[in-house]
Image (cartoon, rainbow, N blue to C red):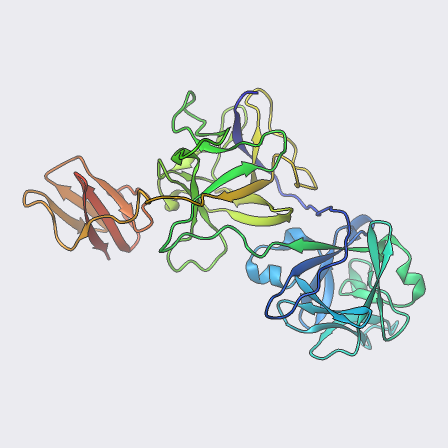
Length: 403
């Protein structure tokens, strides 16, 4: 099989996760196991999941999740209550309950959150899903109509409302241990395609045979640093975006694609030249990797043969060329970009290093490398963001502050 290349498909999509239904594991506040609660649904209701908004519970699509705080509104854990379950939201730490919607003329019952709820829930198997019935009355979780006065509910009314696709739910496990961010310690990962036909990992081939293709999927080989990646976040970053840095080349996978018959992923040398990636859990230890280009269009990192166009984005990304598996390098050895011999002054009497207009000037040699504190190479001839940078000359390194 030919080695395959990474591509971006740049389309906005809505997707739902599909996995055989199973009862959730019970857990405690100190050792929680988190789940999405997703309705089977019909039409626009299909695939919506219970989401805390204010003090009530709505049905919203998982694709609306952008940040960790967004995600927490969708996550629930379960505690046993006799033969039933208490359902507890991660963001609010409150329990799923029922209230009467007096502000709606039908006087219906809707899902809400309460600190100490008298309501527990029975999970009634139905094919690959569950009906979720309240202990305090003949009420079933039900995804209401979208839009208008009923948009704001996952709704409970009566037995009739527990007998349609809009009342059948599944519990999707969430892996709360995503790939670790490298800060003071570097964590290196092999990033494998989740498509079982490959079992190969992303490899930085540098220029390779094509100027426009920087990465391939290749068989994992021992101690191959071109296949090892760390995830970083800029200092003081407040969003959820991460950057993938190659161990051998220090190059970064950028979100801005190049068109060469396909949308091909490229590399850059600085985080300033890319918008960063969102890593989202799909289930079964698989993740999607998505990012916005400079036109504010979302793209999903995927793998495709160079002989054929990239695939259409699937509704369910599990086990496809749009899913990725992170395998940590458990014996990383000494990092190439840590443990540098950093000194507080210029190591060479004949070489001057200084800053002008947020640029780093090196007088006395052209053979030098400038990196940021993450070990990522930067262009010293351009204005740099304020911070500490490392200038390496003939194996010696000094630090310099750009203000």
